[in-house]
Structures are given as structure tokens and as C-alpha cells.
Length: 234
Image 1 (cartoon, rainbow, N blue to C red):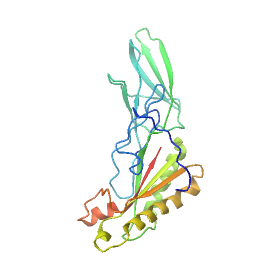
Image 2 (image 1 turned 90 degrees about the horizontal axis):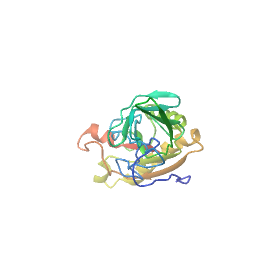
Image 3 (image 1 turned 180 degrees about the vertical axis):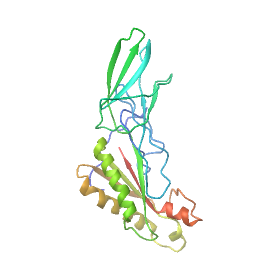
Image 4 (image 1 turned 90 degrees about the vertical axis):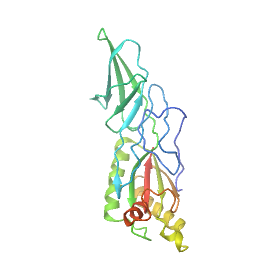
């Protein structure tokens, strides 16, 4: 770890900011946070493809006043159509992070509008996997292109914490190869690429060798998927 991790997590609902899930530091799926009127985002399904970026969408929880006939979300000045269920849950088809400005408008039968600002708190979400050749920790051009998208997403939405978890396939387990060191090198390689471009971010790296496979280690394609660093943010 090069810089301290500084995120606040309150047990309860996920919310007010969008976040992807870090399997290195948080359980998956992400647990909800709660802040003021809103809950943060839920991450997408776990990333399972080679060099894959998954743009996070969001789930917001609001307390809808009695008598409301229409609920409208406004993100950075743009209206978002998202039905609210009986439990006050709304899925927004866009990414919302700590930097974004999100308000909700409640309209009653008399067309009177009540507007509330939603506090955005980052809940952890998985953004991407970048993959590596067997026994290597060198970043491929494809991996770098995914990391460039990650960088833009972090800048655009104001995420401040980056979690990197390195993994290997299980081939080395059969021969005594040091998968732990290799998975650490893979995490470090991603941090070395990201950190100069995100100098204000807090980085937390971990490494788990051949644990938590997302592909079948009995197949070449599965092993390729498992040779990865998982990138999560909050």
C-alpha cells in the first residue's frame, strides 16, 4: 500500500454515490451505504471477461413523501427517468459518483414539487479486470486501453479510493511456482500505471494467487481469465 485508504462505510443500505465492489477489501455484492436521503450504488455483475470494463449503473434508495404521484431524478442538471418501487428503490441507468450532483423531485397531485439534494457517498464497485500472459506481469496494450477508461471514469465521477487485487491461474500450484509473488506483481503493475495519472487517489493493493477463480482452470480460456488484476473503486 502506497497511500492510506480513506473511505467511510456505514452498514445499512448502499448509497448516494455509485461504487463498484472490491473483492480485495469488501464482500461482493457491495453492501448498501446510507447518507441523508439516499443510498449509494450497487455494482454490476462481477467482471468475468478478458480485459473488460463494466460501467457502473446505480441503485438509489429514497424516502418518498406520502401523496407523491411522480418522482424525478436530476443528475448534473439532466433529468433521469427511473421508476421508484414501493420500497423507495430506483435503478438509474447511468453512473453516479461522489463528484456528481444528484437531486430528486417529488411531485404531488396538486403539481407541487419538493426537491431534495442526495448526498453521494461512494460504495465499492468493480470497474474492470485486466489480464496477463502466463507467468507475466507485463501490461498488454489491451490492458492499458482498459485502464485508460478506468482513469477517465475515476476523474469524471470523483472516486477517491482504488482497490487492486492480483490473481493467477492454478498452473503454478502444481509445480511450486510462486503464484503469491506473481499476483502481487500484477497488482503492482496496475498501480504503477494508474498512480501517476491519479496522484490524488488512495491506492490499496492485495494479492491472492490462484484464489477466487472466475474461469475454469481446466481450460485455456478459463486460465486466461483468471490471470488478472481486478480494479475496484469507491
